[in-house]
Image 1 (spheres, one colour):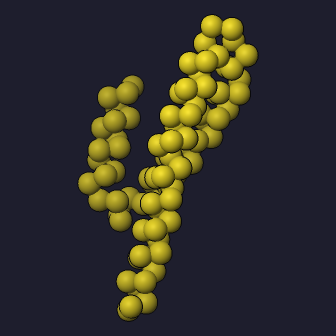
Image 2 (tube, helix red, strand yellow; image 1 turned 90 degrees about the horizontal axis):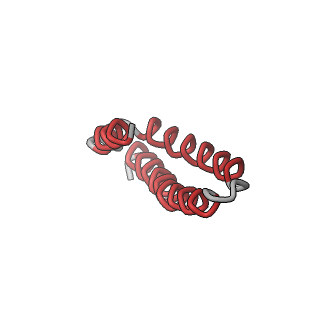
Length: 83
């Protein structure tokens, strides 16, 4: 599963301007799933701390991805307006 997801991210990285909607969707979906999974599984005695690390790593990846996507949208709007 990780190889499939990694391959998808590499494919999306080849053309970030064309795939920006898909990249934004996957980042928001990953944030949602990671947050829900962290909340649900944190109560387990053995896996709780590992789940917190996993949830934090998802946030550390997705928040900058979403920030960069907003910069792409701003840059794209400037290019379309002729500046």
